[in-house]
Amino acid sequence: MSEIRPGEVYTLSDRIRRITAPNPGVMTGPGTNAYVVGTESLALIDPGPNIESHIEALLRLVGTRLRWILCTHAHHDHSPAAQIIHAATQAQLIGMPPPSGERHDQTFAPSWPIKDGERLQGPGFTLRAVHTPGHASNHMCYLLEEERALFTGDHVMQGSTVVIGPPDGCMSAYLQSLEKLLDLDVARFAPGHGHPIDTPQDEVRKLIRHRLGREQKVLTALNKQRRGNLDALVPLAYDDVSEKLHPIAKRSLYAHLLKLEIDGRARSEGEQWIACD
Image 1 (tube, one colour):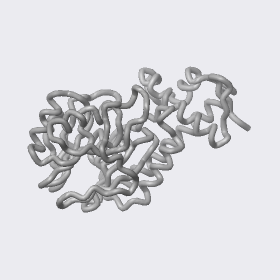
Image 2: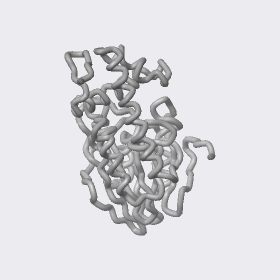
Image 3: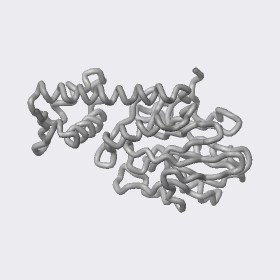
């Protein structure tokens, strides 16, 4: 598998090209992938962060042919470049509006607040919106129907699991959205971070198993502690994760606990969590 180099144009198919932003890190892997779809009039999916060199590379690639800018969600590594590229090209902004809060890019203002099942019809391609809340309530995947390729944003990432951070992130919704993908006729995932995934159904099943396995570790930690706050529970439930990542893991731990509360298997008393009999 070739190394992902920011700024390089990588051709995935006759209809799909990828440029990765120069924002590598713990949360973003090699960087955020932007995808250009089409051969005549073009669609740009997830333009990424507001980094001048990245925006310039995207504008060089699309030239005067860009007609649509789609964002999977409004996190700061996926959508801030959208408004700048829109100003330069007048391409239509498409996606679900951002939830409130500083974790979401409030500059993203789509003129088409696309809904689940709606289609963008371009010359030689069709993109169908698939609402996949969980990582973010406004998260939308896009299915390129002609190639059965799903642009998954942060719903499915290659090489790592997704952080689910309440209050906008929801573990119950995330698992339901993963199940939803099993009903789609998909041949390939084009994720927001990392390489394409050519065994999409296997990947989804693996993610579901992983999340349910983590949920069981959370329950085991609760039963061992009898009661505990996030700081007490995270070393037990995430003992296979580096301590440096525990502050991030606490966000997903909280999401797991909220799901267990919904399921009637745990309850909270202030900051303390208790397993239900």
